[in-house]
Image 1 (cartoon, each protein chain N blue to C red):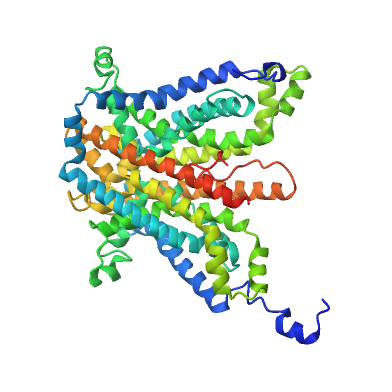
Image 2 (image 1 turned 30 degrees about the vertical axis):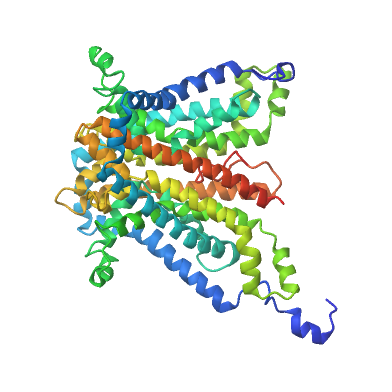
Length: 307
Length: 276
């Protein structure tokens, strides 16, 4: 720069106008760090500290309790059923919405979002009103000896309901951004529809799919309100891990619920790790000018594809 | 119907449409319809009585009030966090940025459990707070704290992209025209960020209204004092009072749909600001 020396001395190095004074900057950083430590890190560390407060032996003892074991198994089963079903739905819905124009599309999108705006407790209640003893289908189910509410199928249905939008809302914007020229080329070259889908579409959305799956899975394994209403709380039979925590909380050993909670806290950390990795990857690819493979923002349940 | 089927040779319209509608109906629409059918079976008088009795009103009041305060706290601290994370470079920034989504990833039951423990009189925070009369367990304050925890990612993550895309040239222009930093901040920056902040507030508010898992551990569910609306629904269900639970559920759903509409309007407004 060729500013006159006097001017440069006065203005050249200063960003007084666009930069806060250093003390303001560090004050703001300190306040927000304090907030982050108290609200983010302390609760996390506390889970592990309380879980191990009685030693490793007690921790292991709490986890090897047969009822806790059965809760772990049930949580895995529920997630193993509901996540793949939502993946199939997510793929079908995103293909439909991204590749075709049809009337009622925005209404369909609104319906897909609906479970996000219903309180989990209310979604559980809906299933009770449909499948419960006094529910609409109750008499018929009873006559055929089918148990849904207060049994595993109810837990699965409630979990599917609350995790319903995750995969779809992740895939839709990605598929919309990619467009369908590649698929059309493959079809012109003689590939069948399924071949096109498996060899062309799936590879291009795979990271977005992984992103949707881990968020869906985290919520599926951690859901409390909806499953709490439909579970019936039969120890050893219909208690998932979060419900098991609730039950142990009301028992005598204060460390036991925290021991179980460490499993879910670890799941949350793994989820965050994978999520951060995928976002980092997407950012790097975007910088290299490629099509983004992940569409972050699933945290914000309303703004993904409306913009 | 595809509008131009001739130019869209992609297969699978019928299959994906059929499956999407089938799955959507079975999982979402039929259960919602079940609630509606059951509620329409009630007389208006009964519904009104169940939805507005004293205990229910106290629960709405707490739910709305605590959610509002929590969303306000999120708007303030969330904006501060977003600002600090986007504008400043300091050690630990990436770690904290990654951890912002922690309340979203952590199962609510675990959040409630650990917050209740932290605020109890022997907990790491309660140890210092309880002697000063700040009780977090079984008080409305505890409800607010838990709701602030679950709503935080919404406020931060709504504002962050807006701040990242914010054109610094505007600030430089203001500064070069002689505005002090304070004046630039109040007259330029705050008005630009306001729509996103309000959207974040509304999202956190919507999330807090339906929240259940993190509250039950900390609130103690005392009727008229710390009982939120979702807790009262569960309470009525446990007493086999299905009609009572239904009435509350409908009111709660109306609250969330109104909020959803407001959020949509806000987002349209915000995106108008984002692209001048």
